[in-house]
Amino acid sequence: QLIESGGGLVQAGGSLRLSCTDPGRTFSSYAMGWFRQVPDKEREFVAAIGLFAASAYYADSMKGRFTISRDNAKNTLYLEIDNLKPEDTAVYYCAAGYGAAATFSPKYWGQGTQVTVSS
Image 1: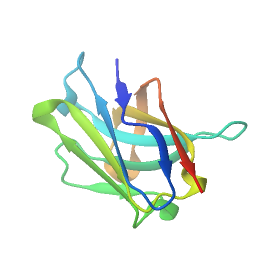
Image 2 (image 1 turned 90 degrees about the vertical axis):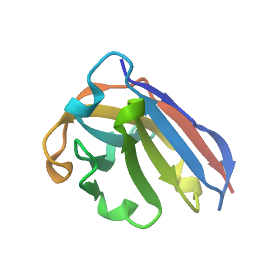
Image 3 (image 1 turned 60 degrees about the vertical axis):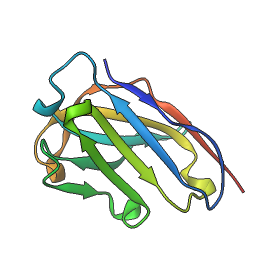
């Protein structure tokens, strides 16, 4: 089971680092990704990272302020978000799956962590 943490209420312009731990699987066997979702909209891809962090891939709209990383020794995935904007408000989900970073296909999901950005 994937467990996200690090969400909360943040002022616009601030930064946040989300974490996702994977206590039950062989973390390094999976490509990992982050998605986000707001009410009444489809889940949106944010970024993905390959098995050994050799490659990362971002949605075009996420380039520049979002940084995905992973620490296989700690079975943990991270998403750093800088210069937060109110439109970043969403539930952020991590996922474990397959494929290269640019062709990431999620298979397992976490429960999500809420990020709320105030203006």
